Image (cartoon, rainbow, N blue to C red; front, side):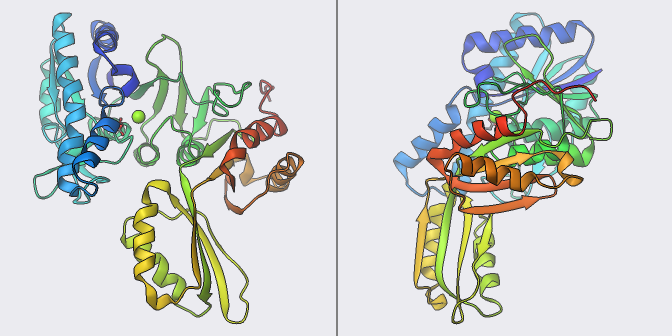
Length: 406
Ligand code: ASP
Ligand code: MG
């Protein structure tokens, strides 16, 4: 069986962790499996590299930023190869470019455009464990590009798809996907299975177990994922197509504290204005999430929207430069959180939103914005109330108790 196994930063944080990963890989190799291992940078290496960059230049060029960040994963691959050699396992390390991972030219959040896995395949055929650096690939200018934070998950899924691996296992510091963040919600429970769509919503809503782009990719190419603990030997959570799963109403609660709210006051209420604003924001590579526009008053309206907190500086610069909009005021609020309920059962049931608002009101939590999808209801609230909201919703939707078999 061909396995792609991905180990995140905490799983390879120091030499001892790396030896433990090597041991675990050896068990699978001894069992006769072909193995590709994808690794992240050790511990907080990527964060450290980012702050180093900031110390020498507050606004580094994207190319150099990627050049720097990609080194984190390169440390891990070579060390893991050495650790496997020490156990007598044949292994070879490869950077993203060496492994044939091609990207587009958008530095710092590049998309994978193709994988040419021949070299990886040859080494697998020779019976070697192939260790691939996550989070990077080669762009059209033959420069190294990184895939965005958490991008090693994407490397693993894309590799699994390209090699038609039987399974893609994501080893991490949590042992699966929970009904809520167990550090915040005491009674949170580990799920046996979640659907791709639910995982996608949960991931993009701030459940940081898997990077959302990796889940999209897995869904598109039908790569079954397993999220499991790198520290314990026990089953994790399977992420797969929904067909054979029970349609629960609410699968989980997630909070995203990484958003900021922008409010534009006195926006001219004429066709084309919103298009101008959001085209500019999109062209700056900023993902807008929730958008709310008020009713018009004397030809003017207010528009609020949320963006990732890290992009607020970019958005601020861009909106300030658009003086032709003649806005009355622009407000920024980075003390918000988005709390979401997710479940495929919402496709066929009503009343989730009203139940949610009721539970929030009973806890005196004010709702600033609301957005929904087919299988999700999200509210933007004050960041300081996010934990309370998660606990209240977890209880209100019956997630505290084990589900009864249906
Ligand atoms: N090292 C990168 C990060 O910290 C990629 C990853 O870990 O997935 O975001
Ligand atoms: Mg990660």
